[in-house]
Length: 287
Image (tube, helix red, strand yellow):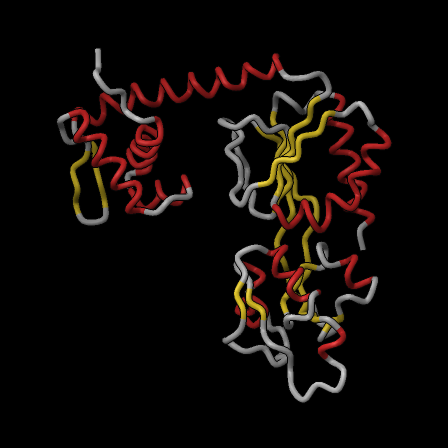
């Protein structure tokens, strides 16, 4: 009997690195740093008293002990994931777990959610927001709606809407302004480099300014008059309509694709199907 069991995170890091043949790829998959994966593997090797990998520059390969542990670890993780999924039978009746990004939840879903609640007052909705996309095989999620999803095993994948981006700011910044507003920077498609790469017109954006890792905070900052930002047409629609944001150009560029994943175990559930149909109709009706 082991005096000390290996930590689960260490086994997950080892399994990903072994399967992908790279600490860097394992770090990307698990949303960790490469040094964190390296430390997890080193700690596991120290605990077990033997090397699990041959290190060859940036590539790694398994030792005989590593191959043996990989088979055991993968079987254990698969069994654990299946066991967690089985816990669904103990959930409350009419429970629906929806994952999305904080920005989509705050700026698009929440303002419309009361309409769904009125149609389905019995729904026990759990809105679970996260910065990273969920692993649908290991997390209990019925539906994920995000702009950073790809196909996953045992899930239905669908592109719902292709967003458009445009530069905008609070109208007060344009009244008698001597120059362009301060520049607010985001990440991924919300960064001004994306606007420029897509052929967007120069609206006075600068490399300096304020930086935001969350698209929802970026949109809030623009609406509060902190400067101009590249905003999502889908998420900014309410603020554009009520005049809180004014476009700085009639031009738009391609934005992220909002997609959904529906887990196979949930796709035939009447409440899940009702939510997905309501969501699809709302997105198709969105300006």
